[in-house]
Image (cartoon, rainbow, N blue to C red; front, side):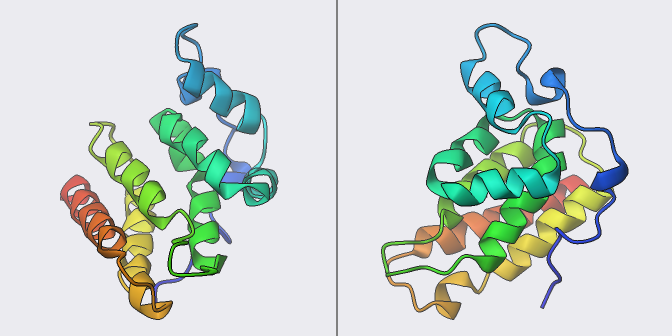
Length: 158
């Protein structure tokens, strides 16, 4: 089983993302500015605490973060998906929408570093068994999106 990305990554020594990293410098980029308002200036542990309060709401911020901020705060999503437990067959713990956002980031053309691409691939491998692990029904979309994430990460690495 792949190890979670969130402990021990070099992020604590890296500079925090700035508004440019979030894509929040354009006055019309309202979603990126919202992401900056919620997560800008936060460490990864602080960002996780915010995210954990309402993952369904805050997952949208990740969809609109610039690639540099997304990569920096990726451990928040990784930890959420590894620790969250579905409460019923209709609750996929935001696994589908987070997978869609990660796939979009990987297909954006941004040149992500090898360590981030490995983290994304490790999470995709973990998520490959998500539906079966929790006995979810009618969640083929979750499995399919994480297959796409794995393929996109591999393409970026190749």
